[in-house]
Length: 106
Image 1 (spheres, rainbow, N blue to C red):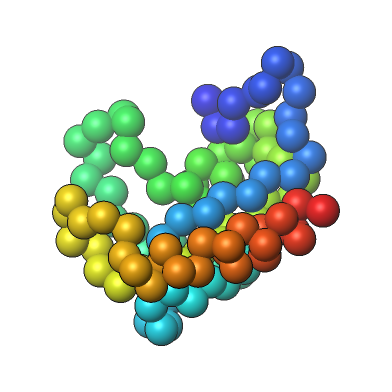
Image 2: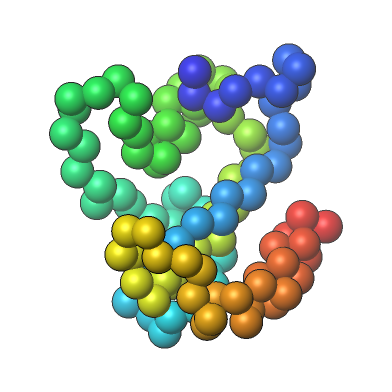
């Protein structure tokens, strides 16, 4: 499965929001497409369940299942320590993030 079908329909647009190490100020949000970035993720290849989202998108394109438009919103985290709650910096920007993403969705 590359991109799952939703009741047999491929969505025309997909937006993915996640933390992204961009060497930017904590809380900074940036919009980009799969063609704007390259993956540096190293896969262990010990599990069929591990994945690299850019590889998934490439496979999806090859299978003809890929949404026409994929937009990423990366948010620079303050820390990637396990078990940490959402930081005050990020909590204080939730409304701004939501507004920016809604503009993209139309």
